[in-house]
Image 1 (cartoon, rainbow, N blue to C red):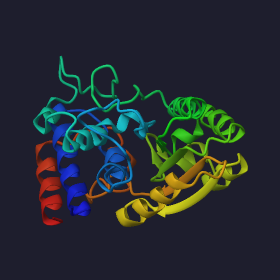
Image 2: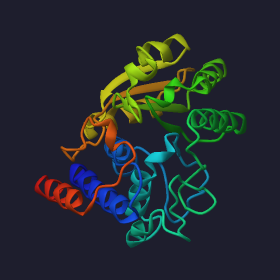
Image 3: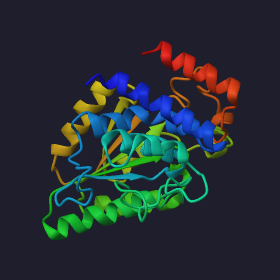
Length: 271
């Protein structure tokens, strides 16, 4: 599979569905698209769209639940539900709500969007898997702005204390949040150093280099060294659409018809 092409195809659907809805979060959805592509289409995650609750599966927690359009696009293209359903995002009666709902959408492990809570849930599941002697790795995708939440660090402390080497936290480090630069809003300083201080192993990677992501995530999935694993992935908010890139204003705004056409033309040219 052409993974870069798949990621580009997902970005097309992301901007289309947000434009159709008239609301949503394009910036952070586009920044984590390559990470999700590596996980679901790069052979990293053990998952089965025909049996979403399969025993021994790997678990995905989208802690930054506002990036639901990216998760929905990936799940649809992976076969969890029809791709044409994506255009129902945020519409009355749809199961594709603004934040993922695990009671409605196959492949969504837990409802997320209350920032800071996702890593705690992932750590709890990882601990449960350990107690059961069960297979499976828990992958948790966090926003860098989300890491300003104190609950993230409570979960980090718990995971290290329990030796949860079956959890991989991936920080979508695009440097921006809804109000601007993370360094201006509430500077978290060196996120890798923080996780390391809490007892995690830490790796840094280009969050848009799909091959590098696959290699690293497979390595961490196989590592059972008694420590939880954190990956600080350097990304670009709005990746793939030049007028959205590195712009905090595109955190939670839908493109109008003219902007959609420009975005789709740019993404089409990248194919």
